[in-house]
Length: 469
Ligand SMILES: [Mn+2]
Image 1 (tube, helix red, strand yellow):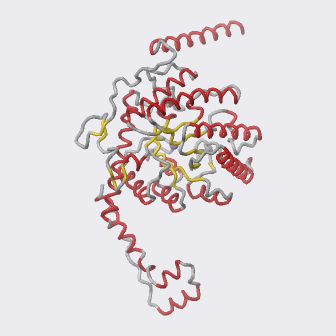
Image 2 (cartoon, rainbow, N blue to C red):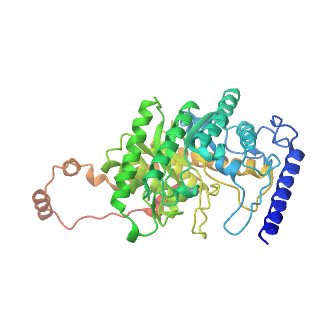
Image 3 (cartoon, protein in one colour):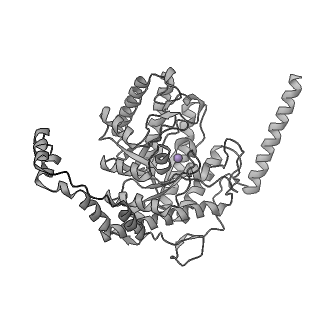
């Protein structure tokens, strides 16, 4: 019985392998697919607001100056390799829905290289200068660390060649410390020492290849650095481990001469019940406790902001006022869906608020706007990949123009300034300098009438805001 079952299984595997082989030969005869991947797609151009062409920008005009800086320099847009080239449309309830013509159904090194070529053609046609990756998106994992590193080296060598040819850059790289089952308790916060060590070795390599590719930043997103239950968790010990891990990362960065910014990407939960980098304020406090504020900035993702119960604007402002705004993962969630849907952001008021913070911050370089966003499961045409990025870029461009209008008009800033003008006094200065003690303030109260309390003018602020949209 057992033998028979094994034979049937073998037959099924063979059939599947044959099926993949047939698909591969249909799409390409040679090992190296060097031809055009997006034959139907032209280079995406700016055609202006009146254009009805879905494969053109209506608002994003790379060279146009806004507040003294070119649009492309405000944004430094980046394509996320994992969503655009590894996104399958699969979800916990259903099989993959995307069957791109260049995919042969395998996770081979050959396929990794073909995808890399597709990536560079994609970002070139889209007119974007940057891309972002996880180590395990761009190359297959291995049975050993050495094998995985070898695969990565081959993929990275091709990436380097294509970057030079296409004049493209890495916005940031990162290590995938959440997919493999060894990371089920986390990487840096795993209860297993050997897993901590493995995570360190993986980050070491990922930082080195990011540096080799001229990456401008390196990101830590701890999807499994958290807990499912406090009853079986030593939270203090795990946080200490996370800190020693990040301190070691800083030492390694300096050792290899990598000058990119290290970024932490807060997210409150999913896949863990609780992730330690809950939100910007929690992460800032963690960095301060462990003396890491000089070494790290934050990568704020809008969908993560809403999952933590904040607006994206709140998280960006929190990062900004702490001097920690490093990068933006430009995406959005769905107001009716409670999880991380990673959608392209199309909300113009939201984009305007994001850009108000970015302008106040004087831009976010060497960070940029990474499209950590994916097509919906039901969007299955190759052109949808382009249309999604185009609408995302046009939305941000509209946000930038609106925010510039608000700043140039000045009445919103004036409303805010007026709101606090009672502090623009001698006593106000004493308070703000920390020189006013309670006795002095008690004496002032005894001298004055009941405090004057002005209107907050929220609706007027909203009126001014919406008039710029
Ligand atoms: Mn997300």
